[in-house]
Amino acid sequence: GAPVLFVKKKDGSMRLCIDYRAMHFSKIDLRSGYHQLRVKEQDISKTAFRTRYGHYEFLVMPFGLTNAPAVFMDLMNRIFHEFLDNVAFLGHIVSTEGITMDPAKVEAITKCPRPTSVIEVRSFLGLAGYYRRFVEGFSRLALPLTKLMGKGEKFVWNEEREKCFEELKQRLVFAPVLTLPSGSGGF
Image (cartoon, rainbow, N blue to C red):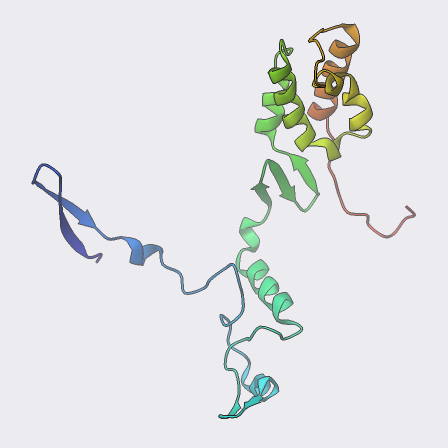
């Protein structure tokens, strides 16, 4: 079981605290695979090194082995295979098909009202600009809105800017899936 302790509150009464940290403790530091994985018995001698204090061999995978990062990633992929279908990461969904925009962000873009101030234009362009790689010619398309943010520029919402705003929203809502080239065809 988890250890229990009492902590005194400000009013002098006691609070029961259960320390569940041990349940959530992992012996593997997933930020780095070095010194986490055992080296195969037949490969231990390949990790040998010499210091003025003697000769040593690593029993665990040290930093500097050429294949260490690949071995660690292969192990992580095998262990977490069933959880790697789709991963949400920084507003993107990464999957075997490629990278798409997070549906929650797409919904936020569709609900975005027409800007009524420079601050709102800046906010919209900040969100849209984060996903600029999903929109071909983003800079040209966003130029009328970007000009609104110029120093001393008066906020005038015209038909050109409305068209630009709606076009950006449409292109972001129907953004393509970004994938790596397959290599089988030309570029």
